[in-house]
Image (tube, rainbow, N blue to C red):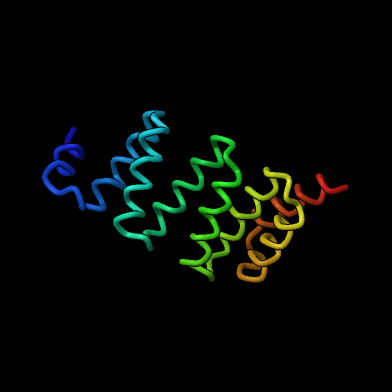
Length: 130
C-alpha cells in the first residue's frame, strides 16, 4: 500500500517501482512483479538490479528466450560480472543452447577463476552434452 501511495504521488519514482516489484515477487504475483520491473527499466534503463531480477523471474517462469535477452542487457551494463555470465550460462543451458552456455561459463571463469559454483554449472552442462 505504501509503494502504491508513493507511486501515485510520484509516478517516476524508480525505487518505489523496483521495491514494489520485489514485494510482488515475494508474494507470488509474478505478473505485477514483471510489470513493475518493466516500469523500473523504462524509467531508468541502466538499472542493473531490475534487469537482473526480471531476467531471473522470467527464467523461473520458463521464458528462457526473454530471460536471455534480459541477461544480455545485464552483461552490457556490467561486462566484468562473472555472476552475469554464469546466470546467462545457466539460462542458456535450460533453454538447450549448450554452445552458448559453454561460452558464457568460460567467460565467467575467465573473470572469476576461483568461483567453484561456476565450475559446477559448467560440469552439469558437460554432463548434459555427453
